Image (cartoon, rainbow over all chains, first blue to last red; front, side, top):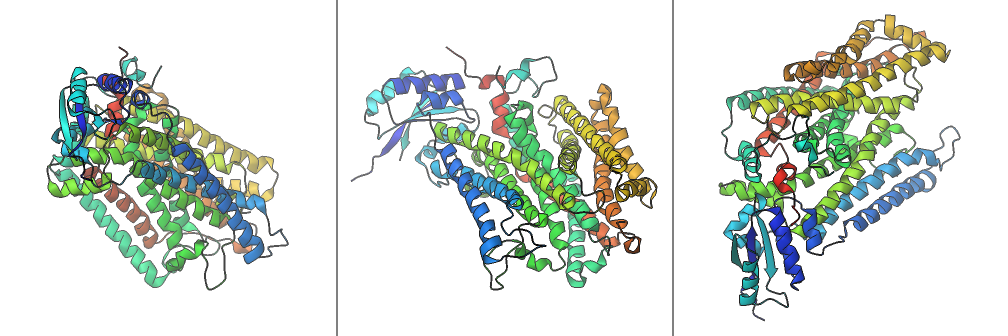
Length: 178
Length: 456
């Protein structure tokens, strides 16, 4: 199969208000494969793209539970099974002493899950991405807002999609080569 | 009310009016990308670098000769190493407080100081982490502290607070590093897109990992960042609590007390904010960042210092009260020894630095003067160092048996190591200011009025 020559069509906007409106209109027009790029997080934008649930909280919860269990079980196993040390006749399974390390391990695993889970779900690190082929895209990390409709969208059509994007009154529309 | 309102209220603004996304971006990234390295930076870094070399020399000599080159002895086995460890790790706490707790409390003024406060945390924890390792006697075997399967069939003793400390501090260091790095990713992408130099573009590009600011990425990013803040908040409180357990679980007079955890945490934040101010005041002046680090930030930090300082004062009061009220002769002797013993001068100096002098922060005029704040912060840092000195040395110096009493005198190597870590800390800060955006650019953008999505 020959790869599509175009990755998508990208429209550039000046303000956060415009990009949110454009994203909402694009989803309302029936486009499914749409994304927006902004220099800072805009909560309303994810809503406009109908992206309501991300997997990060679940990943962090699983990480925290794993950390908690492995922390406690490790200490229990070491103190009672592998290396029991009699300190003044105190019980081997002295659970109050194990709370601190269990807590720290919970936090450690949850933090690692949050950071690496977020990166993995975002598909980062990603050395190459076609959107960087648009020269103006360098401003997406400064003060410009971009909306892209991907060519793999079922409703995508070179002419009609461009006309649609033009109707949103953008700063400019450019083709993203893949 | 959302978190952008403070801009319009009557208090001093968190960001001076007239800025746009572009000016904020350019102003902060120019420090890294376009401005030439100033002579002040070269001199400052040079001095810090020399001190770091002194540190390496002191450590090298320590490796050759052992901990006998320090002033520690029996009964005072802890000495400077533990004093400096607690001092540095306490300083680190303000960074996490600013970046995590103030984020959860929606204190958006934190956005312009959180980045370098987090960097401060990272470098302070690096300095702190050195001391217990150097104090081990055989520092090259430090990995014995971690539970790993080994041929000796040996495991750490998890009933020991010193092992808890290993877990607390290493978790804290990892979390601080990741939190700081996650915060940097979008700004690294900004630097990648702004720099003209190919080599810089590649370096920042690799570090930014291909960040492109997609709305879905931002949504996950914000969730992860918020959760990290939620995890870092109990963590930071636990770290100094565990540090205080190193003392409180022991039985030495003056250590075995339940006030230690909250009083240590308050002291940590107290000294940390003092360090934040000592860094922020010169940084905003030399890099012309008064628009972003405004009088409001200085005032708020001063108020935090005032509040935590009073908690610390309460801690001293309770210590003294319990020394008398417990009726325990060793505890009451400890109080007497602090007030009249051989180190009493330092105890009075500690009370002056930590309790009396900072009360001038009640005066609004002094609280809003950068020069005064810088000075008072310095006094507080000295005071907090003395607090740890008193706790470590005076308790060990004269414990239960007169036959085991002793005195502690730091040697030149103690001082060289301590001053060396200050140099190392400053050298790291200088490099950070030169190579990375010292203020979070993307979070500053969200503070601007134009960042608001207006309803149609």
